[in-house]
Image (cartoon, rainbow, N blue to C red):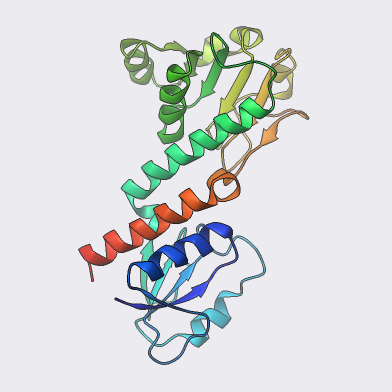
Length: 244
């Protein structure tokens, strides 16, 4: 098993290192000439506390850089394992994100999800996970999707679906709105129609314009670091075994 330098600051990173160590990986705090790679936070280099140049200088040529969103950031003399480019990782991380989002939403409400009208903006990985989990909780789930094919599939699956033309008029009906689209979707004028409604934005860029919106980025690492770390370690082990 490889010898990896643990170079991260998050609780999820710490859990991942613990799991990797139990699986036979050699996890070290200080690199040397025999270090085979480095495990960064995922996403990587999101804070100024980690200087990439000091990391590159401490590693031997051909070392493995493990992280997320690494495109264009790693010198060519290294190998790269970008977990955010792995479909299985991103799918499972979307599920953790959705579960954390519902936990956050429940903490902000004085009622259960049963019969609650909830709108999901977007039908990507997180949107799909949210819809499935909300259905289990007996919420009234509606999804905004721009693509007619997506709306047709949503209706086939038993969800309500609305188009861009229907969106503004529908907003007063909902008690919770979750955005998963990293682009402007609801303007200030539109959110003014959201009376007694909790607005939660899960996208990397705000799609809901409102003074009351909760911008809940990187929820897995904040609310479920153990689950997030377990997913990181399992993905690294799987990818290492597939391409040693």
